[in-house]
Length: 459
Image 1 (cartoon, rainbow, N blue to C red):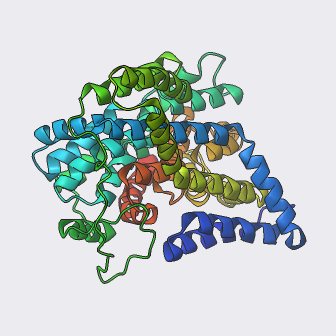
Image 2: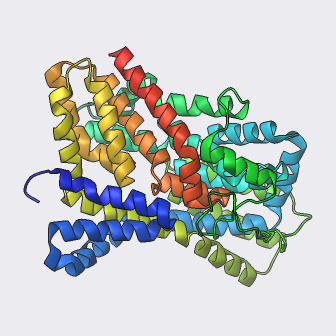
Image 3: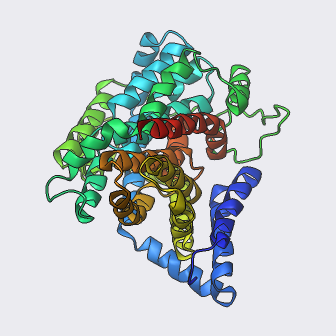
């Protein structure tokens, strides 16, 4: 497309409508991408889709994602099979005496694992889901707490993959001097309003200050009636509380019930420690952890090496739906970029960008883009060369505008139905992806509304 136009809004609308109606996020994203390619060149859809999909699969980020998520699935499978995760669950049940304390424990664990949102989302959900199940809490509520302490927490902590990535972008775009990216990033942390609001909202929801309402209330009622929806039950949920009553298989059926706590805690401590040691590199952290965990289990003769490999392969396969969704989201984002969606949204709002309105409008525009495309890091990378010169031109406060951009990124990461963080939070909590997205959306919109007002007030 030569010029940005409102036509670029059509694919995101198609994806959102299909995701809610079909409850098939991968199919919805692929159809949305095809619709976008039809708008670009109706005669070259097949060739364009082939080219984009190959480019996405060759992308270093996608390769990293497949390796990290798959290997994490393999590690989780070992933790489950050896009984280490069961032992941790039993310990957690001694601390968590009821629904509120179990959710609060989930929240605190999410705050503690601040290094990476992928690591956070997968670890906390997998660790706590049996504890919250004990008190008939919905998987949707668990996924909301996990998602709210994934990207938002990582944004607020300068020792995280988010800080490393965005600090580097600030240097690359001349906003920070060489070696000062993290320092400039830290100046903007007080203004990352969405992350602050999202994190602080969770205990308010847990203790009932903010009531459970809408789809989340329905999910909680169904859970209390013993009708949780498994992650693989990708069927439409009837509005008349007609969940398919299906007994969930106990994935601990084959696990060693006398598992030792150290077989869970030691790999988790190693994973966090190695990730920090390797300059916040989750992949290297996982490799080092697996390299020590496998012989550690072998020495204890917990299972033959051949069985370990089978468990690891099964764990890797369990992550394929999450990986597939993120790959489809990357393909869809590429199509939206070709349709010049970011440029259209920014150009449409540019006339309203004054020094006093710029932070709020930047947050609004980038939040819409991040929500529509499922790309939080990508949108920041695309928008920062456009927004920051505009910020200097109108005399807006630089840390405040950076805070608005990061707020929009964390909103998109949490709220988008098919963002990587949302997908992995649902995966870790063993929750239907669309059910998680729909139930948490009202809470993310409340946080976004408070954030928008906050930027208007601060400016």
